[in-house]
Image (cartoon, rainbow, N blue to C red; front, side):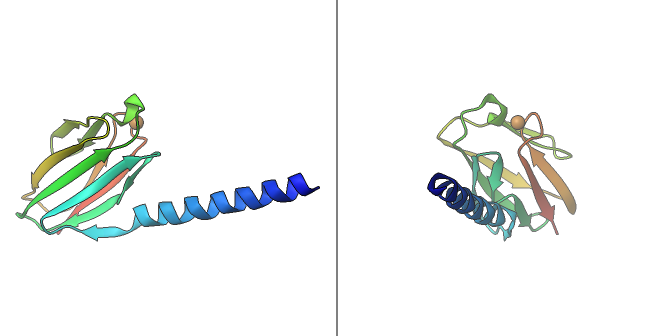
Length: 118
Ligand SMILES: [Cu+2]
């Protein structure tokens, strides 16, 4: 019985941590000059970023996930595809001259993020 209660409590804690962590990655971040984007555990944090059309911004991808699936980030519609070295930060300089929403994903599309250009 005690074991069961402990297990329940543990899974509840796990759920709360997971929820807040995911919630954090769901926030939309406005980028003015540069931003760090952490690649870990199946999510980009933050996963939704907003930039202004024509402005130069630097996205610093910090990959903490060793799985080969996370080794690339691909921006669809922008012809950007970059290797992400493990435990290092890889800077991608962007200057988007069109407005719209562009997805960025890993090679297999498991990591998903969105770049909003306004
Ligand atoms: Cu992947």
